[in-house]
Structure formats: C-alpha cells, structure tokens
Length: 610
Image (cartoon, rainbow, N blue to C red; front, side, top):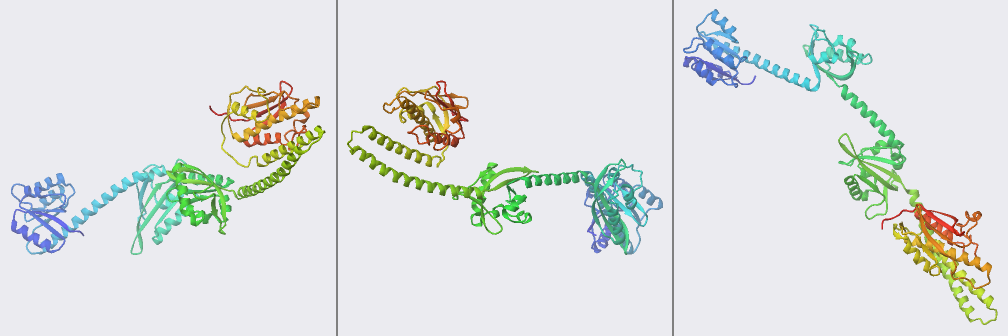
C-alpha cells in the first residue's frame, strides 16, 4: 500500500507525539498533529488519508469535529481514538459517520492496533474510490462506445449487467440475464455455437474471448455485437467473469458496404481494356491493379500490389518517373506518352522487357485519402506502325527524289533539243513541246502526291478569300475569272489548303480548255474563258466553275488516282484534293454548279475567329 498520511487531533501534545512516533516507525505512515478541532480543520486537506481524533477536547469535542469534517469530506476515514467515552459515545460517533472507534489503553499494543485499524480503513476507502472511478469511467466509456458491461458469478449463478446491455437486447430491466441463458434467447442461430464455445471455454479453462456475432433483439431486429470476456480464477476455480457487449451494427454495415464497393470497383477495373494501377499519392504505394495490369506486366496481381509505382518502370529512370507522377498529382491528373529527355514511356514486364505505354491518370479522393488512378495503354503495335510508316516515308522520299532527278534531266535535254530543230512541221513540233510540258507536270504532281501528308502541323486561321486569290495567280486563271463570295476564316494547314485550291482551279482550267479545243483547232487556252466561284456553305465552302462539268456517272471515280478526261491531265489532281481534305478531317463531294459546270463542296470545316 502507498504511504498513508494521517492527521492526529489530540489536546495532549505528548500523547500525540508518542502516537506519531509509533505509527511512523511502521514505515507506512506520515503523521501530522493538531491540538484541537479548530486547528485540525485548518490543516485538513484532500491529501489526508485518515483522521484520528480524541473525543474529550476543549472548545470542540471529537463528535463536533467529526460533524465538521463530514461536511467537506463525507467519505474520508475517521477513527475516534479516545481515553474517555462510553458505548453511547461510540454509537453516536458511528451514527455521525465515524469509520471506527478505538479506546485508548496503557502499553504499546494500542498503537499497533491503531495502525491496523487505520491501514484497513484507508485500504477500504481507496478501494471504494478506485471502484467508483472505474465505474464512472466505465459508464462514460459505455455511453461513448454504445457498450454495456456485465459480470457473472458462476458459483452463485448471479449476473450483473448495465443498462446498455438491456438496450442492446431491447428488453426491460427487470428481465433476468445471464451469459449461458442469453445464448439461446438472443443470439442468432448460426452464431449460437460460437458464443457457447467461447463462454464454456472462459468458465472451464479461463480462456478470455473477443468475438463478433449477431443477436436478434426482442423486437426481431438483427444486430451485430462485439462481446468480450475476461474470466478471473482463484485456486483453480472461476470466481467471476467480467465482459462487455458493444453494438457494432453500424460499423459492420459500413464494412460490408465498403467490401461491396471494393468488389464493384474491382469489377469496373477488371472490365477496363487498359491496365489500371491505383497508388497512394502520399506514399506512392500501389494499392490495386486490374486483370489487364497483371497481363501487361506478366506478373500476378498480389506481386504488383504493395510496390512503389516507380517500380513498374525502368529502374534507371525512377527519379524521372517519380517527378512525372508528382506533376500529374499536383495537376489533378493528365495524359502522358513521353518523359523529359525521352520520346516514350515504358513499363518493364517480369522478363525485364520494356513495353511502350501511354498513361492517362487522375487524382481521386476515397474516404479522405487521395489516390492516383493511372490507365496504361500498350502502344507497342502503334509504335511499330509509326516506325514502319517512317521507314516507308523515308524510302518513298528517296524514291521520289531519284525518280524526279532522273526524269527531269532527260526532259530538259529533250526540251532544249526541240528548240534547235528547224522544220516546217510546226504542228508536230508543237505537239512535242506539249508532251514535254505534260511530262514536267506529271513529275510535279507525282512528287506532290508522294509527299502529301508527310508532315503534320497545327491548324492556323486562314483567310479563305486571300488564299484563293493567291492560288488563282499560280494556276493560269485570267484576271477577273475568280469570284470570292465568302469572308470566312477557317482553321487549316495553309500549305495543304493551298494544294487543294490550286488543284481545283487547275482542274477547271484544264478541262475547260480541253472542251474548247474539241470545238476549235485553235491554240491551247491559258485560262481565258473559264470562271470560278469560291463561296460559303453550311459547315464549309464550295468551288464552282462554268466549265463542261462532270457527268453524274463519273462523279464516284473522279477522286481516284489516274482518272482524267483531259489529254493534258495527270490523273493526280483531284486525288490530291481528296487527300488534302481528309488530312483535315473534311469531306469533299462533287455535284453540278448553277452554270452547269462542276461544283466541289468541302464540309466538316472548323471556322476560326478573325
């Protein structure tokens, strides 16, 4: 027992001093003395564990002093230790709340007896205070945790339960409850054996238990409870079992909903065609992946979960990937297919092979925690196509360069040689010149078609009227032959749009000249006589001419490579028009103009401001 502080009140200083010496010699006591009741009240504090007082004292006797003490300290141990008195005095003292009464006597035995009385009174007082403290704490804990407490004495067959237990069972407080009897009455049939085994193990073997089971309350409501018990044994026999019962229905329902949500979320992830990886934004640890993720890495799912997200990528570039993820998290997500200083992003499979991927991510909040949810698309096939296309373009460019060079040189030689020929057959000579010019145009169109669409550029605002006027000057149209009735500005690649307009204008000039030539044996036209209009169209624009037009039966074929009705045509012009339109995502159709000529309608065009 801890040190006991005693306040001894006695009007005989010598006796008080001797009493203090005897008590303190025991080692358990610290004694303060006071010569009377008034002085004792002044010295009395909550630090005092026991008051020992004489009865017959001047000014305030022991009973009066007792009454005064009880006003402030109703439970403090108080022992009346007096040389005078009677049974009546002792009875009155106990009635007023004295803890004990002891008659002074000669010899030293009385001090040992007093020490035992004080020790016992203080021990009981401290035990009661501790019990009260624990009871109060238990009640507060039960109120907060929605838990009830119980105690069972197996020898007496008696049980004590708190109000919360009755509330959990939904029964009146006059109902007798006991651990074994409650099993059949309240616990779910599927859980009865679990509870019965736990209780029997506690009573027979002293095994504590902590289980979560279901109860069916008196009103038929099913609840989940967590019940715990701690058996206390003495001499091999169970003296009592103390335990708690707490309603955890809300928690179990939340857990069940969480499990259902996780299953639903996992189903969604597994249904995604791309590999998905979910990582804690703070730690970077992968919390979940899907079936496609396991297939992409050729690793079981349980090997992936728990890894740092940078472990999916080439180890020598871990810091760069970590920086990329930090930027994505800070921005709330994004899309990436390249890394600083690298053209491609990679993951590494179980064999160490690098797989190019495109990553789209978003930051999501679940239960107050933030996660980075990334979708990884395997772009191996796409990258291979791009590399093959690049190789093809390089070969094509090399081919076009060689062919262009090898064809132009002999043509230039032929053209120069024709200029040296002196002959009266001017018609034949002119025909040779036209053939050379046609072959030069054929080479130009071949190069243009071969290189068409090799490069991509961002669309820019282009004023349609200005570009159309510039194209008219380069395609043989006479002055005033072009009418532009639109002031639209469209989003386009200016170079590609120039190819489209120039080829439409050239097509009109060539076919108009061919038509007139068939009617007259005169010189070939330089564009005089054909008129074109560039006008507005819902969702685009049109180019119309007043030439011979295109028969309806031929309109499906005009965009094919090699199609031409002119002896000067190469068969590439309208195919270039179609390719230029498709590069922009536009549609091009041919119909008849108001003047009976050809009308080309370009739709799906995006208009720009200004």
